[in-house]
Image (cartoon, rainbow, N blue to C red; front, side, top):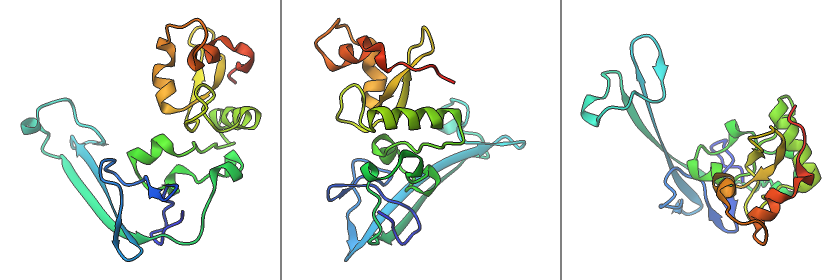
Length: 189
């Protein structure tokens, strides 16, 4: 849903799942208004800005390190985008979404037709749908490919993408069936 802060916020059923802290779901701060927060960190060595500093203890952080937490409130508008009704190339681009680690794992991926990966995502979504091609429950977020031959097998939810290659089964489980089904594989261009 579009918020009056100019960002699109992810709502699943009646729950907002965006917002930086996944343990603290956004709740109305006052009638109709929601509170959000986002933290960021950056440092500089005097020559360039970096998002992450070298691995050191917190007492040894570089002098140019900066932490910020930004908090804001917003009201949801009546403008809704239903992912299952929108062509994959027209989903809300990441730059317009509420900046949230939680939402990135549940929001359908934006398919930019100007990039090779975007074109592959569009082909896969049109051919097989936007649900995870292995479990069928999660939203397809990651393009999966066979590391041995480079062929794209499908798109997976974050959970399946992280664990599918460790599946010990030959058949009978969704991951094994997905891995055996090479009919989904397309050449990665």
